Length: 444
Image 1 (cartoon, helix red, strand yellow):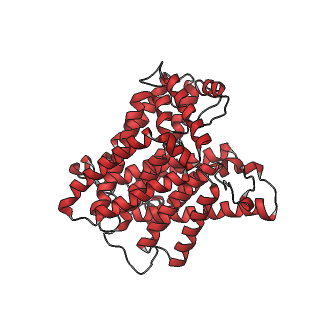
Image 2 (cartoon, rainbow, N blue to C red):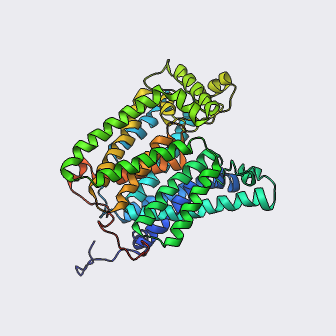
Image 3 (cartoon, one colour):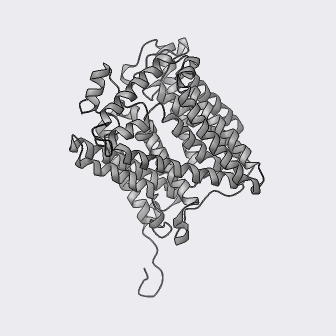
């Protein structure tokens, strides 16, 4: 836009604010804080207030994209696999048992995905990891304080948060996240982020040590049966990625194929020997309950194997087939306790293929990127994806809330470095520098 004198007009104050780096950082912190504390917000201020916050953030997100439209390529805005998966979930409204409930569930899914897409385009990998680290430090500290108040100082449960006050007995605890499994999952994600912060020297050493001890302690106190499996899976991924990064470039392709083969063999062996493994972990009751649930979900899928029963995300206990499954199992499950089986039940085989493609393509892209880049910050994306995919075998966190948000955000980050859209040109979101400063300075 030019003035009559031919001079370029300056953008308005609102556009300048929405396009500024300071606003992008504040927006990212608020979104992460809202999504990761959704359970506490729901219990403290109510569902209507929480939904209102999400709607307001989405409106701000639209304003940010419009203000930054000259630096963002809308052709590369969203990964194709994400569009297809969300589109199929939206289409399921037409064959769902309750179209209204399914529609609102899809709106919620699309809104969280949209916020993740915006952050993926206004923050680079280092800035995103730093923002997540700041948020998780606060939320995990708040969880520890709440547990200490409930179990030590006041010696009374906080029913409105679901806190039982068992920290004096060394757990299980759930903090402000509602369940011990979700606390353990968040603690492992925090450990990955805090260790990446330490390796990149983006925070002070003392703060890094405190953060790692905090996350590790809460993961242990959660007494979640899935934390050990999750930690082993992420640990193996760290070792494999370190091996690839230190291998000569001409040998990496062969090594990648070998590692891929080992993963396939490991999955087959793990499934075949699942009963001895469960017995060795001492979690037979918990895992056998999950197996019974998964078998029942497969039984209910048989009438609608291609399209499923419609998208709901977290289960609505009053809707079919969730009420029927819980009735036959004499249980009150709020999810399928497995993201893959949950997608299969709700969206059929088509939905499962699209979901696996979304997560798998993101993992491959980010893994290859981390294998070739010098900075350790690029390891954050594939390691977080590994944590999400491993946890998805025992929980359905990846389909809603913070898990779904992270999956979309990581898919967007991965798609910006390796995508067929790169050949089309256009704007590109700035990425973290190849070598980070070693003065311990904080990323802006």
